[in-house]
Picture 1 (cartoon, one colour):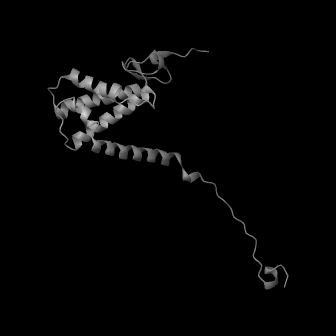
Picture 2 (cartoon, rainbow, N blue to C red):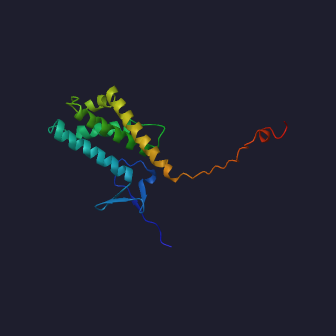
Picture 3 (cartoon, rainbow, N blue to C red):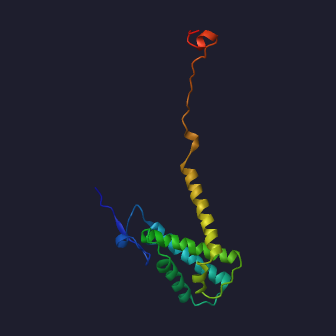
Length: 171
């Protein structure tokens, strides 16, 4: 009976208990092991940083941009109804969506601290809500598969044809 190996998550903001990952659940990137959701958060943060550098300003102070992103994801957008790691993943997805929405709709961004205002924008919140509803609806439709429905057979007794049989021979 082999002992299961555990690895420490490579993500510095990992919120899983003990920050340990069983080998079966770990995602290995180069020589480092990650939880799947920790790796996704890391990639979303990197995508925001890269897009900011390409589309908004390449002279931004990167430490300020990363600090702003981390503050929004790990502190400001905490959802107490969810475990911390799920709340962080949801916040990272929302921030990435809000930033992409701002780029696509020409919402002006000049400074990293403007991201705080961006996540509170009514238009972006409505667009996010529509996107989430569509995603949930798609998930539900995948779960409910109508192709495997059981066939139902109906049987009916033959109706009486003469007048006396209708009233049970009373007349």
